Amino acid sequence: MTRPESAAEVFDALGKDYEHAFRTATAQRDAITALIASLPPQAKVLDLGSGTGRPTAELLAEAGHDVTGYDVAPKMVEIARAQVPEARFELGDQRELTFEDGSWDAVTTFFSLLQLTRAEQETVIGRLAAWVKPGGLVLLATVPADVDGLDIVFMGHPVRASSFTPEALAGLLRAAGLEIVREEQAEFVPDHPGATPEPHVYLTARRPS
Image (cartoon, rainbow, N blue to C red; front, side, top):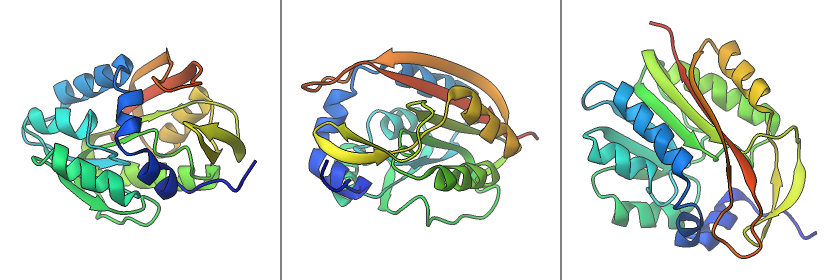
């Protein structure tokens, strides 16, 4: 296998192909819809790994929320700004972002942890828990697996992936002081040549008031 590509390299190359491949992930839309139903009006929402802006930022903005997305791939930020002008999108690495505690009503991160090491994922999850207000929500989605630094090919690109089992992820959220309020597991086949079924887990957790 060739050198694993960084997230910026992968998603700059994929652009809208990524959105197309995952456009029918109904469990993701269900998780966003459930989140929207739990948010106060005009909530401040941070979307990490915001990609093309669809569907997450777009659905949240359409519901009247104040959405800011960050992505590590410049091409994704460019596409998102064009597609979802109602939200703000900035270039940024989630490992380096800093916010005051209690800055956000909700934080979402859909599949953006997978190219981080396990230690980095634990650190990011701890930060998300602090960034939301008391009563605020964290919505995290990933491909659950007991893997650490596994070299794989994702949509034609060599990447190094790490993850946790659903139970371990829930444990990390609880260890960060959050309460699990919704969990859904699904199987999804991306619309891309050679794609195989992959498990998805969607966890929504609340910071106690």
